Image 1: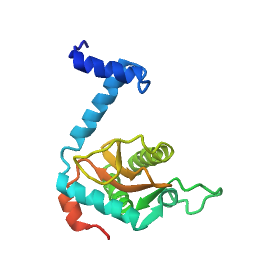
Image 2: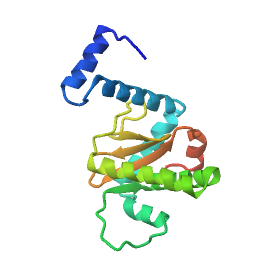
Image 3: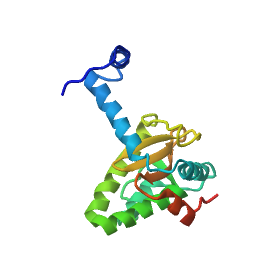
Image 4: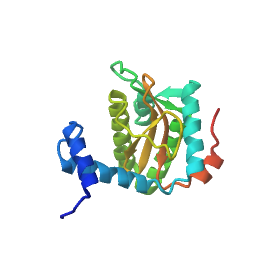
Amino acid sequence: MGMSLTPELQAIVQTQVSTGHYSSATDVMREALSLMVDRDAFKSLRHDDTRLKISSGFASLLAGRSKDGERRYRQRNGRIGSPRKVMKRFILSDDADHDLQEIKRYLIREGGTPLVRHIFARLKASMVMLAANPYTGHSREDLTNEPVKFWPVFSYLIVYDPETKPIGIARVLQGNQDLKRIFLRSPPRF
């Protein structure tokens, strides 16, 4: 497929490659298209409701209402203890923990246990990767003024605070959910 870019867009692509952030123009375009897909997947999110959900998750983190994310994943997979001590790499706000429980219920209903294992393995791998590289995500000023970053995983957005050690997962939002209905059913826990 051939495409032509305006001189301004060509300059942007060349600048990105020359800074070393991307190895080729194709990588720049791939990232741009990925961000566009991410944006479009979450256009269905009601911005006001999303702002409230993100704020409540961030407030939970600040107030210390969180759980060890690694331990919660082990518990969900039926392993209460662990033979080795695992460093706490991320924590889940109470709201994020609730989001994951809702996602699990939905996935079990729609696709069964194999689907849950697949999606949750990718979510956990992304959270571990974000813990190691906290500024990898992107900002969404259109959704919140909180100092959080976003990382897409399938049709989900991990909303996290890159400044905390371990990183704090504020929310895990699903792109096609009716946020107003969910928000009213499960108000923020302050």
